[in-house]
Amino acid sequence: APQVPDILSPGFEANPYQAYRLMRDEFPLFQHEATGSYVISRYDDVAYVFKDRKGEFTTENYDWQIEPVHGRTILQLSGGEHAVRRALVAPAFRGSDLREKFLPVIERNSRTLIDGFRASGSVDLVADYASRFPVNVIADMLGLDKADHARFHGWYTAVIAFLGNLSGDPEVARAGERTRVEFAEYMLPIIRERRTNPGDDLLSTLCTAEVDGVRMSDEDVKAFCSLLLAAGGETTDKAIAGIFANLLRHPEQLEAVRADRSLIPQAFAETLRYTPPVHMIMRQAATDVALSGGTVPAGATVTCLIGAANRDESRYRDPGTFDIFRTDLTTTTAFSAAADHLAFALGRHFCVGALLAKAEVETGVGHLLDAMPDLRLADGFDPVEHGVFTRGPKTLPLRFTPVSP
Ligand code: HEM
Image 1 (cartoon, rainbow, N blue to C red):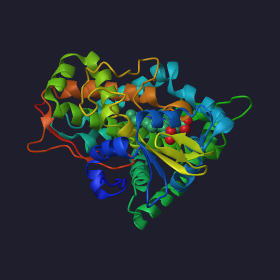
Image 2: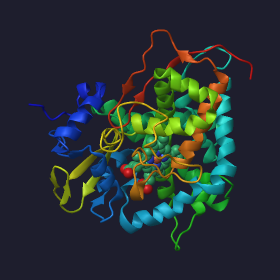
Image 3: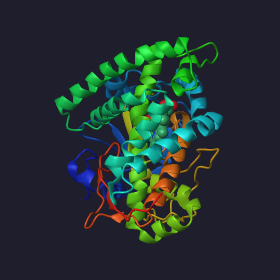
Image 4: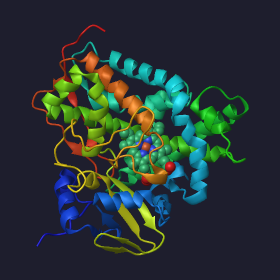
């Protein structure tokens, strides 16, 4: 008889997609032995939990995972408290702020990184571009000193190592907690400065935002900026690496995108469905909740497997095939982040940065294709994904013939 897969084992990490299918077919709801959390994998169940129309779930159980490195962020808030925080931060990531203030920042940062390798004929797309681009964009959006970008990147590395520390390495844990202290020492004086002397940057916007007489405290603003390292950095990093890994494995689709750049949004959406950067999201059941396969008891943690739900046969035709031309996937537009894949979640906590991510990835992919018209994988290299909470290629060595800008 088939066995319930262990979602935290090395064998699972090597190929989760096979295990995901078994879960959807045979174990749509099961309790993970080591953690006690209830695991769901079907599209309808995961979408139901994310939408949470009846208010059956909270995100309180994020506290143990996120609090030590970020403090209390929007992700841990529920109900009215979350709604107010969301109203305070969301406008900064869409509309005219995105188009007029941040698009130029995105363009500039992408070009600067590409200028660093475009003449060399080779690049590790993860180390030299994807892992730097979104973090540099966030630092610039916040209006931080260029001289501090390297430190900012160091905190980014420590934070994502902390959040992905499955084996509980004590050195990684200590480095994450140190980062929280260093980040606060760095950010809090700048936050106080911007309150009295606001500029045109995201940090000033966050400091001065007001909804129904409520403002964020210095600590709230700092925690939000800290969250952006992981929420806005690691995800976009993995999306850029993922889109190229997928296209390079499907050369005819790479060729199509190269010839017609208007296909980039479809390639991005299909990448988010097929290889989402975030695979696991947690919720806490506030009451008993019936899902396919049984009932989640009040108080239990629910682990929502986005990577499994996005490949549900009952939602997508031939879900195990990467196909940017599929017609059963609704994608984001320039004005709306609404999508039916679950990579940005749904409902109250739907990714605040979805349109920013889209602008970064679409700009970046265009620039990279221009700079490397004949890009290919380094000889004999086969892209491998890593990670179970977040997932993507750790390295993506490419070769190309340099062209003049
Ligand atoms: C929330 C994915 C890019 C900021 C989320 C959530 C997911 C997600 C799955 C929901 C978490 C949950 O419900 O527990 C992604 C992916 C991205 C991306 C796949 C890139 C392709 C960004 C960017 C930013 C950002 C660029 C901002 C700079 C946030 C924030 C939240 C969030 C602040 C919390 C929203 C809330 O709690 O209301 N993201 N994200 N994300 N994301 Fe993103």
